[in-house]
Length: 634
Image (cartoon, rainbow, N blue to C red; front, side, top):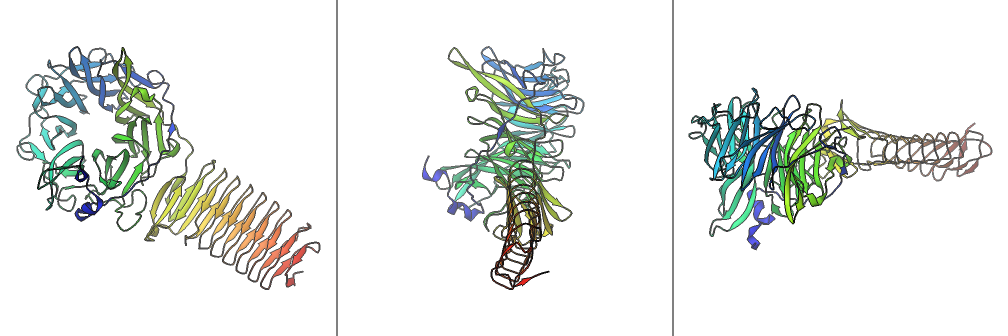
């Protein structure tokens, strides 16, 4: 590939394309498969040497519909398979759970949709280089009331995705066209131009040309508008040398016109995201949130990126971490997943992403509304479904059952007689709730509620000061600064670390059980260690530090602080202003440091009191050792 095959940042910035290098991280855990589904959470269907599922959906009764391809002798057939909720083949459907379309050549289905009357619409291709649209009855029989009496509609091309728009069918193909069919399968000539609409001419620049788009996914909104995603080819005008491809997000009106209310009137946009100086390869999937926001799933150089747009096509900068600098448009997150293939929404509206790769097998991520990883799913918010890498597992679709379990469809393989045999695969695991923090704004308070495990939490301000970022373990979550007035942190058990050193927002902080290190910010904070050997730092401001049980070290630092050791043998260090230090039970050591401090040690135990500079006062026992104390209180 030539040096010009991948544009550099200096060339792309002139077109408004912002490039950002993303750190590659892996933090996921293997999640046990659902033992009540198939055999130990796994269902394999032998559909011949190249059998695979390409798409899947779950019915309201919990039955699972999957489409794909099966090998039948010298050719391949397009198939639809239905499973009971427990993973068994549904023998009331087709022939022993499998319905086939065989036109005598090589046929395959790529996408599936379910009508409200139970009829099943599937799209794909056949070997005559034709796109293929077929409808089955709810029992798996080809519906002869569809198409030309044989249940089939076909023309030149290849269908990549189908969706329903009321009783109509919207299909997308690999050449950037979408079509609307009526309920009988005929092309609806009132849609677009004689039934067809195209994503073309996405931007015209002096130096480059844009080719036709290949569409990977589409979604139909409640208003009938159609959002499509895919990729465009990029060429140099003078010699038509390919520069690779980049992603596209577009929207059509319900009648097939580019939507002038989207992307500043253009109806389509280039996602402003790239990795390591290269353009993103394309957009793999799309999901529409109930509020009209758009989630676009991108793969680039083995990085998985999810962007969110507002309904008008502007970047939703409340999604994901805060911008890193002025060139960062925000609105995106990156995930430690190799090759993303599909996105769906859970019953509660959370984003669900599936990927596959040699290192990870099949992986699923679930995200909270603000783009942070949902750690109730698994460690790091990404669950790895443990499969042997030699099986070459591939995930093609993800869906959620009525009871909230996650199902993934795709394929795996095995080697027999030096030949690799592919098997259609379904896997399911139960979404049990694991310990996870709760992070969010409630009644103008930014809350971080931790778990009983050891936790690392840092609060800091990004470059522009309009945001505040909470870093929990390896992951940042960002919040607009004007959305809250104070911060409340409760870390519960475990040996925790917390720091808000530069934050000028009042903080109420509790470390819980464990040996914690807690560092306040610049405002007037309340920092409590509870049990354990804790180290507490007030930071700036007039703070209150409570050691509670355990042998603690408490440092007021700047500001006029009140420091309470309570039980245990504590060290109390006032810092630079006039502080009040209260030892409590135990053998405590007091350091007033600078400022006019008051030190309280009356407990009948021999203790050491160091006033240091300033006019310091001590209220203690006669048996205490006192140094640099200017006044003894009665």
